[in-house]
Image 1 (cartoon, helix red, strand yellow):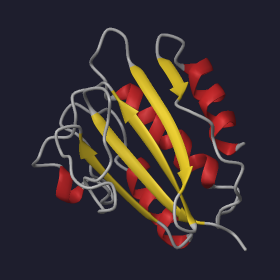
Image 2 (tube, rainbow, N blue to C red):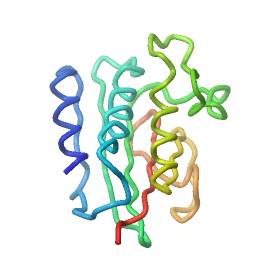
Image 3 (cartoon, helix red, strand yellow):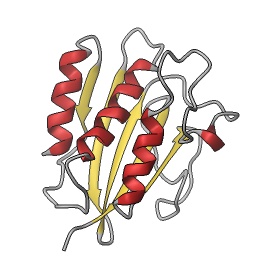
Image 4 (tube, rainbow, N blue to C red):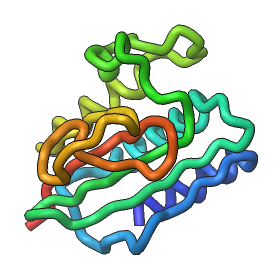
Length: 154
């Protein structure tokens, strides 16, 4: 519900972008509060704003995985420069060409941490076992993949 609502809102703000949902979204309650929408909105907005493609595309998917829900936001943008990856979620960190405040991904990390979850990002080229942590997700398009892993609510 939160993912689909944020997808529709961000799509209305950026009609030039294509934001699609890959597969069926689980109807599973996670440990979070009303600010979970801010997490999803920040990831979707960043995927579009930092995309230099003539046709920005973002794909959102989510799946239940061992008592957790894993949400993926994948884009066809330029990816994340290696030099920025270690501090990507730091307060005030922003890309060289970013007009943003550098607070969005810091807010994402802070909120996800408060929910007992994890968040990470990687480029498409980073592939490994689906069971491993950062770098484990595969992305069918060029660009970056942001992953939010949240515990399922009791």
